[in-house]
Length: 368
Image (cartoon, rainbow, N blue to C red):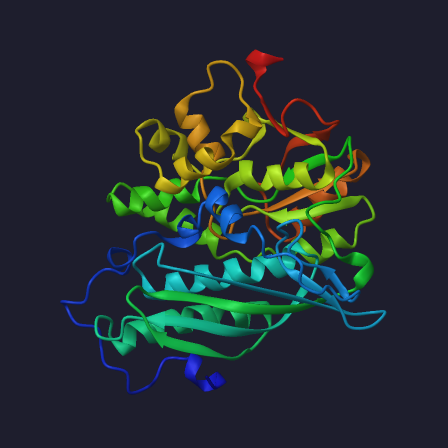
């Protein structure tokens, strides 16, 4: 698909009153429609054994955020793809969220995006060309914000609307930050508050007010631009982003990759406004339960940990925050980078400890 095809046509037909809501066309939205971790493991079992050239610095071995291929002594290519069904009904917002989410994986490796390709699957007999054009324009607007072009892509006629990007970036080989290099004693810093999945569930049930929707869009369309600056800090050892497998799932990846235990200081974890009340009312996503079913056996919860709290711990995030493992003496620098980029909610949420009985332990004041 040529680059010009990724923007709305000037002759596009207007949406009709009979056009359905975007979220009504998808069985799951945003990163909540990811295949459950346990099922994904079963699917990928036996896919190893392919030739791995020495230039491939990061592959599939630790479920990292992107592949990294060394080009020369000063440059490595970061390559990733991410796409999903609508998480919101506003076409342009859907495109913006999907694009920011895809670019996040480049930032999470410490890379700087250089270009993208569009992935577009749309039910063309259901949605107008104007609506589809708005989705693509939303994605293009985020790429403009990141300073990169959408240089091509591919389109298909599909039953459910799907949009996303192939995202490419560059990073110095010495600054690649994997999700498997955390060290015992490292402090964990989370860049964005949790609760996007719960907001999306509330939106589908018509329980999300205008302020909540504004919060949801603001956080899911904010590019994780601190990534390259964080990767340049000597005290940063590991980096990932929190998406569909939730804080718990991505913290487990850090723990397993390093052979350590993650201790989460639950009261310190930042949350989006009102999500705890929504979770207490039972407004959660199905993906939250699937996440728990896949990896709950690897988590030690404190006594009396409420079901709503567990739903927050396993809440799938779309375009979620960066999760940083850094030396204790680098915490102020890490928080400073986040603040410089406007991430005022960034907070210390835990630490990496010697391997214990389970790879993830959730701490609460009543258990200390």
